[in-house]
Length: 213
Ligand SMILES: *Cc1c(COP(=O)(O)O)cnc(C)c1O
Image (tube, rainbow, N blue to C red; front, side, top):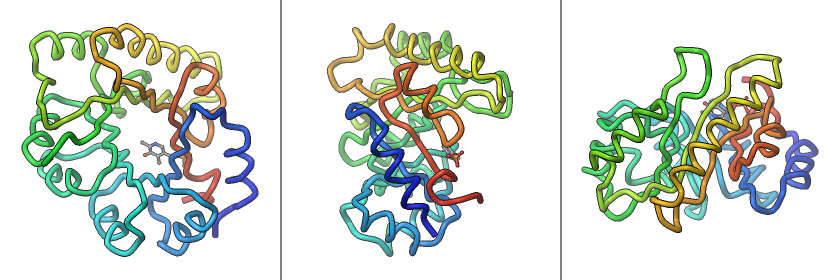
């Protein structure tokens, strides 16, 4: 069951420049159809198997966002389906995706902004180095921006400062990355308002729309 009131309240509150990705992971296709009927076209999944299955069953005009950590051996499956791959967190994964992407697949570079070591992503320095060494320069991949996840904490000051750090990296890279580098993917059910205040252009909201998993 989709909480349509919550969905529409979030959509009403989001500024026009912020895209809502409805994170449907673990939820049935009937939920996705319900949100689709409300006009939602951007859906996020974090497991490849589930992404492939749902993609096969649902309308072609859905834009699928691969938001979770990806194993390089799954790159092939994702490259053909995803509208945007949010979680490119290593040069290895970048290379694997570039091998299978047929024409300019849109991707985001994931930065590690949280204090938790369980979260994935480049550090700022690693990313700058990889870019300097041309390790992220395949013509098959179109780097559209950055993505990050804040620490899971009630400390909103900390969450805000982590999002701000991500936005700062984006702003620093922007002049060298070209006009299509336009996306800052940050903010989930618990912290999307903070993320928008700190310069998010894309929020990934699951449980606030589809209920607890
Ligand atoms: C699950 C997930 C989300 C959505 O989380 P909610 O707290 O349910 O909104 C966002 N981003 C990523 C990478 C996720 O794995």
